[in-house]
Image 1 (cartoon, helix red, strand yellow):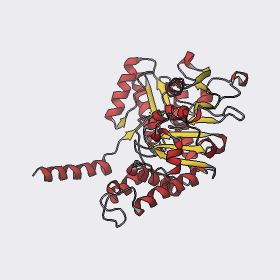
Image 2 (spheres, rainbow, N blue to C red):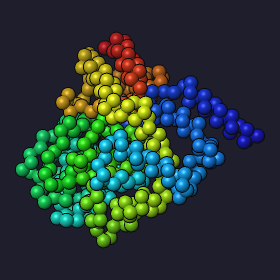
Image 3 (tube, rainbow, N blue to C red):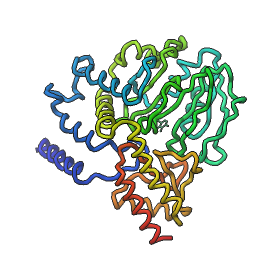
Image 4 (cartoon, protein in one colour):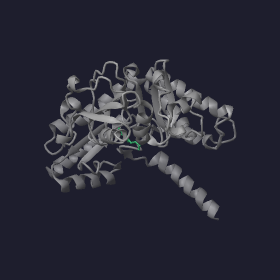
Length: 379
Ligand SMILES: *Cc1c(COP(=O)(O)O)cnc(C)c1O
């Protein structure tokens, strides 16, 4: 009986998936392309005639090896990753990279430079400071991280082991449009909230890292793209699991990788390549969505964006009404209408619409229509 009830629950749930999908503006975990979810659902019980779910597969099986190889090949193709870079499929989230990067790279001069553009950039700086001499060369904290600070290259540490930035600042909604010129110092970037949203010149970086749960797939997978010459420099005391060499030498199979998340990431990459048409096309869609929302914000009498126009993110768009009560009322009304997770980060307040790759254009169109109606009723 219990078994039947549980099964029925699943059937109801399936109906929710196909009939009652909400527009989810969460900063992460966030929406996945519906086509990916449907394909995963179809393959859930029997992956391509194997008679098992990908979740149940041995990571040492030839079927699973094909899945992880396919995911890596797709990522290399879609992001045009040069051959002298390794792709690592890890766990621990972007947050583990805050320690893993200094353990592996901060071992030459023991110095590194950081730009503080928000909470994540600051956490990366604080964690690395436990392992070496870290310098904040610029910060935008003075105005709640609502802009990308101008840099003075004379303040850079010439013999730094690396220079760290957070490319897209998820909480505050800023993005670097121009990369700092760090010369021979490897540029390291947290791209958790902008990976796969537009083309990126991987060759400009020593290391890129991203938690998957914004634009790549489910939580539990962390992707690191690292130039080969930066592997093998870990300090002696580095835990085996925190050494890039361990994972590079073992094809991300030193231990059990996050098998299912990698499989879904592969489906997301197939969707980007085959349905969208690659990262240039993805960028065009993302620009269209962001433009809809920014143009509305710039013309609204009630809502306004909080970021300086020149540093605005394509992915995360924070905005306010100027009144805490109206903000709360808007978030509540939006939720009732099927637009969820629009509340801003607890450190900023107001609203934030995260419009990652999987958010359809119509989701943003409908949000703007809702905001226009709210404005008419409340301005
Ligand atoms: C979400 C996010 C993180 C934290 O990622 P975890 O995988 O939860 O550790 C770090 N940096 C950026 C830019 C993020 O958006």
